[in-house]
Length: 519
Ligand code: F6P
Image 1 (spheres, rainbow, N blue to C red):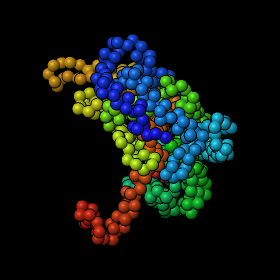
Image 2: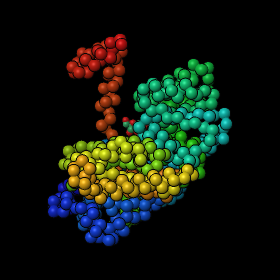
Image 3: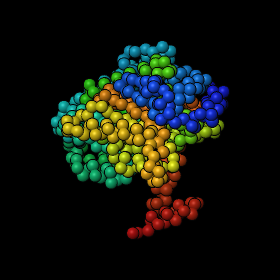
Image 4: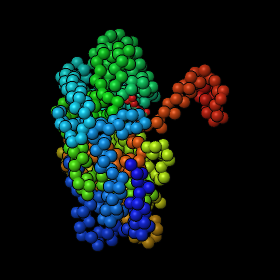
């Protein structure tokens, strides 16, 4: 597959960028093109998207679509969906879409093993949902503690919060991820062993933070005189042997072709299933599947994940923008920026292509953000008047889940106003009060924050990350960059205990000595 920066289409885009891309003025673009909103907005499953306030023209988009064709993004997509081992550094397929595919549904081109895998997926799903329902009905259990980190925490923690309106009463859900004992300690202080279930969520069951927290929770459980580990500790893992070694006999498994950051749809979603119940969990999967089907079948010009991924590449590699700000205008989506950070930055934060050769330009942008309107009173100043252009992605929800009068209109008015202010700017003449305007934003709109809509929104984000990763020619599905720190932390933990500094650099040795000095 040609890397996109080595294609004639890339060079055409460079020329287009030099000629007009950098000078596009959104205010003029709207003045000259009455159909701009119509052209650049669309309804995808559960998500309406307005891409018209972005710094691109119809010509830019047409050239980007040619780039996608030149790099066979559709072919790469199909290879993922049919189960080819596209995660080449780990020799694995990338089949998280199978986790939300309806039972028995065959897609054109499926590899032969997919039929069996889909049956396994549904077998585990049924068992996990039956367990979730049983636990929901068990009034003796009042607290559920999910212990996991990265994809084994961010997904369930974000989604449980996002779907708070659907949550069962009488069960508290807690999330412990950090090896910092303050986190687990705070949870343990508030729960009783007889009424608590711990979900030990770890794909590998080797992640040091999760193992440390699991061991401490088990030790606390025993210290309280409790015995029934089998009933109170559940493993969510591909490594059931390691779980069994801890006395964890009930496990819901998944597979090595599910990446950690793509695992919310698997057994890792158990905390969500407990919170919202089987029916809503199925709707969550169905929403994601609807977006998968859109990505698979929609024509390129109205394929939303494709359009977003192309826009991301345009911004990163042609206009040189290095970050994207995510502003969910819904308090329940407060953890969405953190979830998207892992999704995009762990997937596409790569500096070499599939062959191991350095990529020529930038890859993943920095993702960051906070819910609106809070962010407006913190860092939006920089979006409006700072020296860098930072595309803003607004995620708004039309209907509120509360009935407090007036709030929702104010919230939505603010979302609209920010996008408008960024684009229109304002001239005052004294510099300080001048807004340059012409600053880009994308507006994603859900009708309501339902399980189905959340599923579709997350699948949309997964696929747009896939599109940009495919164009960059990188492997979006490994994460070797997190390994070195893990290895060094093991060595330094031993040194913190022993005090040995031999062979360390001057700074690390100095800090280690300081850390060992009694306060
Ligand atoms: O260290 C990164 C990572 O491997 C993530 O990709 C993953 O989501 C997280 O750690 C947790 O891994 P596990 O589920 O195996 O504990």
